[in-house]
Each structure stands twice: as C-alpha cells, then as structure tokens.
Length: 356
Image (tube, rainbow, N blue to C red):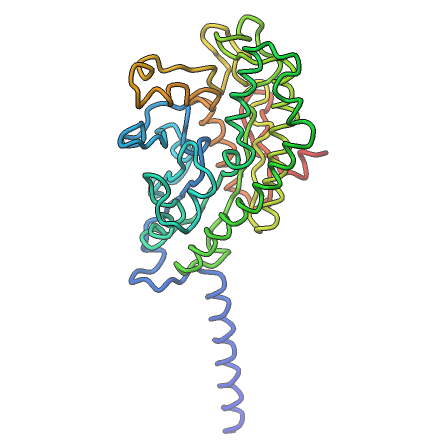
C-alpha cells in the first residue's frame, strides 16, 4: 500500500514537472515584478525609411531635422496604420536612412539616436512585445538610395549606358552578399535582447521584410523628367525587375538563416509606382515622385535633406503596406509576398502560393 502511494506520488510529481516544462517553453516568464499579461502589449518596428514612414508626411516632433534628427517618423508609418486591438501600443523606432549599425546592440548611440536594439531591450521590460518587425540592409553595401541618385544623374547626362549597366555586371550581387552578414547580425542582436528580457522564441513574432520598387518603366511620358521621374526607361526596368528582386532574395536568405518570418515586398508596388498614375493628382500612386522642399533649400542645414522624401511610399502606400503586414502577422505562414488584388489592395499571399 505504501509502495503504491509512493509510486502515485512519483507519477504526480513527474506530471507536474512535465507541465512546468511545457509552461516555461510556451510562455514568456521574465524576471519582472509583473506577469506578462499584466504588462501592456506592444508591436515594435525597427529599421529604416519604409518602416519609419518616410514620404508619409506629418513627422513626429523631434524627427524632422530638430537637433539634426532626420528619422522622419510619420504618423502614417505602417505600424500606425495596422489594425490592432485598442489596448496594443504601437512603437516606431525605425529611422529614415538607417544602416545596420544603427540597429546593433553596441555601441549604445549611433549619431543622435540610441541604438534601436538597445531601445528595444528597454521596451521589452515595460511592455509585453508581441511582434518585432525589422527592415534593414538597403542603406548598407547596396546603397539603394545612392543607386537611385546615380540613375537620376545618368538621365541628366543622357548617358547611353544608363546607371544599371555597371551594377548588372555582378556588382549588385556582390553588394548584397556583403550586406547579408550585417543584417543577420542585427537579427541576432534583437534575438539576444529579447532573450535577456526573458522572452522565449515562441512568445513573440520576429518578422523581416524586404523592399518595394518605387518606380517602373510604365511611367507616363510627360512625367519622365524633372516633373516626376527623371530616369531612363532601361534603368527603371532594372530597378523593378532586377535590383529590388535580388535585394529581396538576399534578405529572404537572411530570414531563413535567422529563423525569422519573411515578408517579401518586391512586387508590392506593382501598378502603383511613382509617375504611373494621373499626371496632376497622382491618383493611384503609392510612392512619391521627385519631391523637393523648396523652403528647406533656403536653409543651409536643411538643404541636404530637401529631397529626402523622393521615391518613398506616400501615406496611401504606407497604408497598403500596413494592410499586407497586418494580414501576415495574423497568420502562421513562415513567409509571404505582398501582391495587389483585382481591387488594387495589397494582400499577403503565402510564398508557396505566390510562386505557383
């Protein structure tokens, strides 16, 4: 009888131990004075211009040139347009022009702002972070903004070879190869910061997303100049069909290696690129045309940023990107691509379906 009771006790303890292991593995149990369900939930975006809201206007005070901070965090940024429960806090740490070094855990400060990962680590103690969305890499070795500027210069010089010939000779792939380990290190730092805060990998979503092409060869002829899109047609085709897809493929490899979910934006702007809509009202366009802040040109300190908004998503574009991101966040698919439907709205299509 006593042996039977001892055996029952051992089985009970074993069952409790198994239950405890499952509990710890499935839930975030940080060493905080409050349990996670008592902490306010939050979604955090980190990275560069597409997530900061560049091009969306209405920039948050302190990020529109004040104290040389040009992060351009917009109220129209994707995180602010996600469909989320009212009790979820939206936090935008992304900064226009950011490179991977701005997201590394160290140094603590890069330029005028704290490292985005260091800031995230602090937030992870005050919020129950459910999603971290990352977009980074284009401003590192690929230098996508610089490539766009070079293409504009090639148009101005009427260079017969355009800007893409040199990049198309293997140089662009080499730049992407150099960027990948830097982006991977960023994701590693984010994982480590969340680990230290007590999060388990399954207690939050880590999503890496790529970039959309802001331009396409189907520009209106009257806008293929300083009035909107000063690019040669061959360069427009290269940006949309080669440059952006290859950059996206490189980031997809980073996501796979980091075991992060991946959202492909390479075709997100199809049919809605800059200069493809109404010549005057720009109806149907999700990206800004060549945009000049003429007042800024009168100020020596602001002048270098007078065209910063050019060829970024506008407020409508950010809303569409948020629509796709929100759909993807609500699924368990490891990867998806943002594609316009017959009504022109972006939807998150599983990668397995998108390539059929």
